[in-house]
Amino acid sequence: DGGITQSPKYLFRKEGQNVTLSCEQNLNHDAMYWYRQDPGQGLRLIYYSQIVNDFQKGDIAEGYSVSREKKESFPLTVTSAQKNPTAFYLCASTMGEDRAEAFFGQGTRLTVV
Amino acid sequence: SQQGEEDPQALSIQEGENATMNCSYKTSINNLQWYRQNSGRGLVHLILIRSNEREKHSGRLRVTLDTSKKSSSLLITASRAADTASYFCATPPRSNYQLIWGAGTKLIIKP
Image (cartoon, rainbow over all chains, first blue to last red; front, side, top):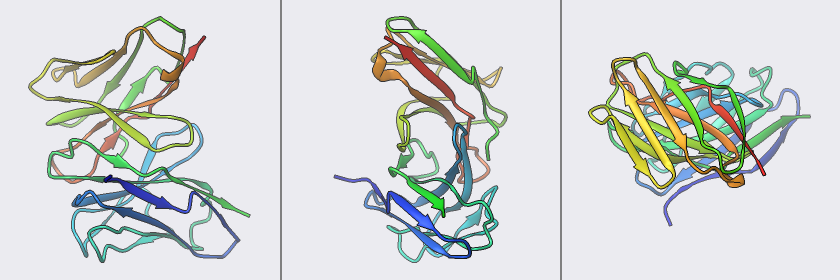
């Protein structure tokens, strides 16, 4: 079955540590997105990528980095520069200019310990 | 990227009642989409309405779109406990590859 897989489901980060969240899709979608969601809040865009080897900053890119070396993969690194990284992170993908249906992973809950 | 607004922020109703939530947006659009998010999970696509449509149905869902007011509503009829979730609207702007999300409506169905 096609879909998006995020891993891990739960992640704990120590102060000053970089961590990488994985996002893989087998939907052959062109565009991929990373969102941050804080408790009881909506989605805030971190980065998005329309095609391989190209990505754009979203509204809250500071302290995060991404790569898009393969169409299927869009990993997100939360760097030590992100001062308040504890949140729920969602990866999504869409196909075509229409972006008619976004598919989401099940999310990664990151906690700073 | 969060230009959309939704109201109410929260809605609590009895099982069997109808639930209506609203979404407003700012840019011109080709389509508007509604999603559901169960607690601690990813979002799931519910229904899409195109800019040349005024109303669309899918099972117990009814979506309307008023492009002159830049607003949409989602009606869930005969609500069930399993409908308890947060509901978000999303619009793809013509200017880039983003999706603009509403702030969401938290719906609680009381048994």
